[in-house]
Length: 192
Image (tube, rainbow, N blue to C red):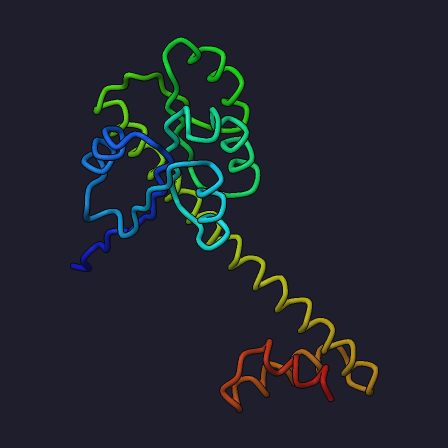
């Protein structure tokens, strides 16, 4: 039986509260997270995001340099990370109504550990689905690109005097004889 590999995730915690940071680290299961970084302000988090992409970003508002709402919205528009935004209970309703449009999970503080765990599990599941869709999309894009190149090569061979059927068979035969992909054969024909 094939052993299932555990996917690893990266997390950026943006919070100036050591208590929040320690609680959040305890919630993150070690076997699932290979990178856990902490930044205390939106500006330092922005610099960090220029260097590395993260799967999950957890923001504890307010930050050292403001509430963090603009940072969260900007993050949602520019990155694919799942975002959890913890806000004081008195502003939760307004924040949630506004940020939900950006796909940001807003939770009120003080928050329960179980609620944060649930949100993280949900983001992991969503991230897994997104990775699968991205993988399928890449496969489809690669196949489309190959089809375009092969079609272009066939047209070039037809212009050189082959029939469409002969051009198609020529590309397949060359690929088999030389141990190449149809794409590689097509690229060679196009480059001639």
